[in-house]
Length: 134
Image (cartoon, rainbow, N blue to C red):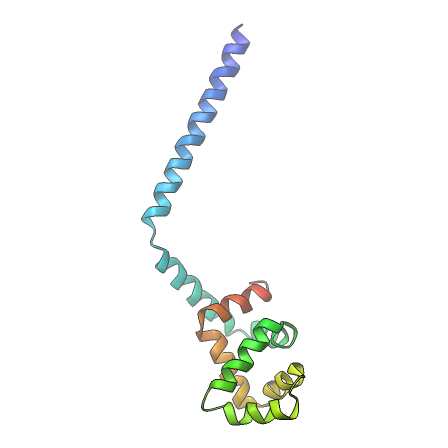
């Protein structure tokens, strides 16, 4: 009987401590504003983005990931500074987006604009960092 009473008291203690921990954690989450954590993670991603290793991986993902590739091409196509060059590449290769992206990567001015777009825009930088495992 003493063993059963001892086991029940331990189970009650564990249940009570778990409930208290869950209440404490939910209270902490409410006290931390979401915008600050998002801004910090974006700034951290931008800092990592500047490393040569990350740049190389992102360039590879721009060729391999259709969503990132299409977003980048659309941005450059609609940007007044780069639209003429990108539209020429699209006319030459209307269905081959890999060839268009290769043209962009071979052109330093277009590549800089593409990398700036990814770095300074929230959804693309998050996607790019997720794709390269950071």
